[in-house]
Image 1: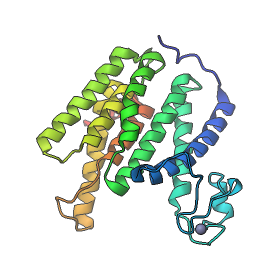
Image 2 (image 1 turned 90 degrees about the vertical axis):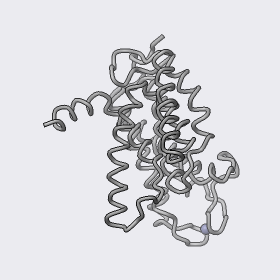
Image 3 (image 1 turned 90 degrees about the horizontal axis):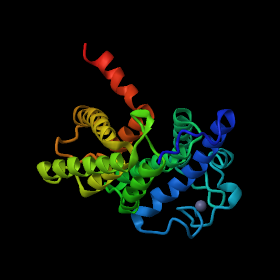
Image 4 (image 1 turned 180 degrees about the vertical axis):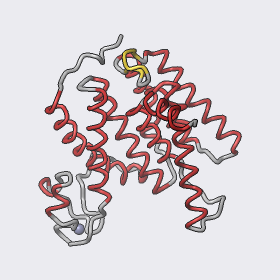
Length: 269
Ligand SMILES: [Zn+2]
């Protein structure tokens, strides 16, 4: 069962709608980033100012636009609003555009939108609190398997479906690889990373797990080195690995085999 090669929407309308949808979901991602770690509901109450607690009215809650109109301040109390809110919205909209450009207007693209936002939310929550929320990764594994079975292509062979087998092997690869790393590093990698990579494997397949790991190791060790050399951080200081895994997973999704061929061509001379 592989339905994803039949586009439902194409061309400029697809790209415009993808960006707009990305901005709106990005706004919801901000809510998740701030409420999931506190175990608050992401549905109610409606958005309110973190400083004065007053509800943010509908027309003050339009992605990007409201931030610019209000010049980054709460309408009620005037306290500055973190530029991270519009940045998360813009990032999410931009990534949706890239996904639409690569995969077209297919059911798979719609699923990848959700996956991308899950990665964005994980990035900021892990950066802030050093946790990867189970609320995302635990439902993400069965949902990823279902999508892999029904609608997802193999991002590394775009004409083939991932299939239930490919999705299961991917989830097992993610789980076993990171379970082993956690075991061998004695807590250097947490349970959150294991569950997250099982989810990533269900969506991207086993090659996606390996490419994500490769990219995250490169960027993660570069960032670690930077912190030790330039910021005077100790070698044992804890750098959350989730953001690097999330970025690696999104790059793997959006580039697939291209990045491997690029590396073989340019990296091995
Ligand atoms: Zn306020």
